[in-house]
Length: 320
Image 1 (cartoon, rainbow, N blue to C red):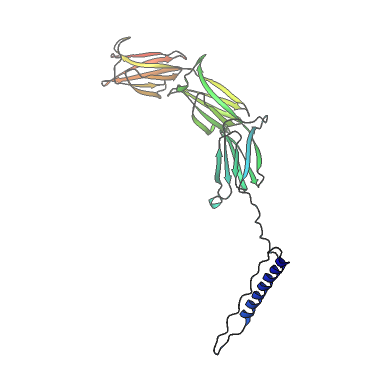
Image 2: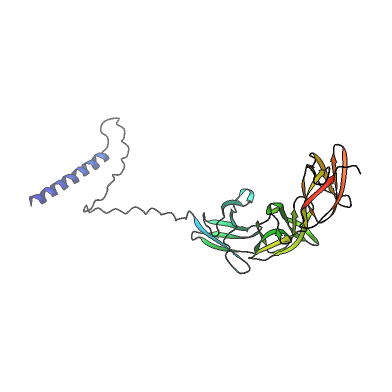
């Protein structure tokens, strides 16, 4: 009982102090000329458990909508012919549509066969290049991401050369690939200076190939078709030979250094010029004339090139 009375007495005293404080704040000022005190702010109370005071709960703080920071874009490509997956040779480029002056802006690039790229939500253009063959698609990414598979109508071409049954060393061959336009077989150049053994990825279609053996007139032309989803291997057969030019005083003699040679067709067209003791020239089969100049003198000889027969061509330094 004493404990209960004591608690009641403490509570009564607190209520009395609160009342006095409120009364003191509202009492008018005493004394002449005293300025009116500013209105006091309403006392702030905080409800405590068991106090019996009930105040309205503060309004809930709005939670901002959750906006995803990025979305995943999964990419893959197949051949149009049989829908087989393309597992190598791909270059992926992702362009955003918010570039300067409305130009697409490159935002991602990958050479993986099936990349997964993280991007901010938005609209993009996906471009897949398989050599000279390609495909593209416009995609819009949201928070859930997207999976895209592109079909590419392309194949590949691999070239080599031979003379008869003997392969030509790859470092002595170059190829040019043309796309025919109308009646012009070399209407548009696709690629020049292609090396033997290189794998060139191209759109499906017909192509004109120019093969050059050596550095003169040993040139062959063929037409080939590239099938979608397939590697087309072709060997271009040349009819040519390599000859070594020499200016000598007698058959089998030592070659004169510093000799200038010119190789001409029977019609007088210059095929190749070279300077040295024994320069080599690769020529298409046929008949030729060689002119040798040394110490102010000129010597000539006619000769014939037979396909696959490499040999020395001696020009004799004697007055005719």
